[in-house]
Length: 117
Image (cartoon, rainbow, N blue to C red; front, side, top):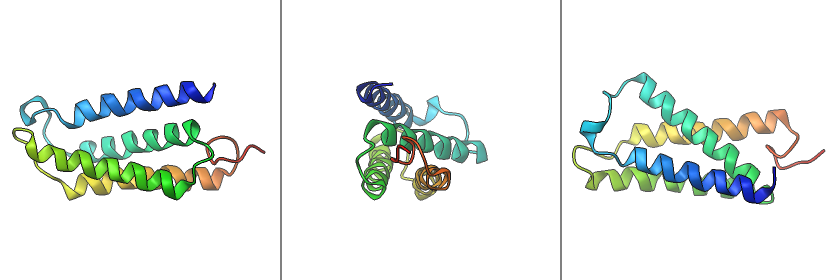
């Protein structure tokens, strides 16, 4: 898949995730372990899409950018009725990001890790 397609998928995923993260509280199910798992998985997928969309960008830069996005969405939730900032959500988001890049590093090849051979 061409890089511009990965970028479009990434931007689409960010738009959908942002909308979900900024829904008012009454639109959401109760907070459970599954909620934190959803954060881990969502941000792991974002990390994978970012890596494929920008394979020449270093992992630390991508990780910092994605973690900044996670923190920003949590801060924005302060202004959403019924929502609050959650350090646990930022932690789960960061775990997804770091987890993806750790698995990619162990796998060690292909566009996931940035290497092609």
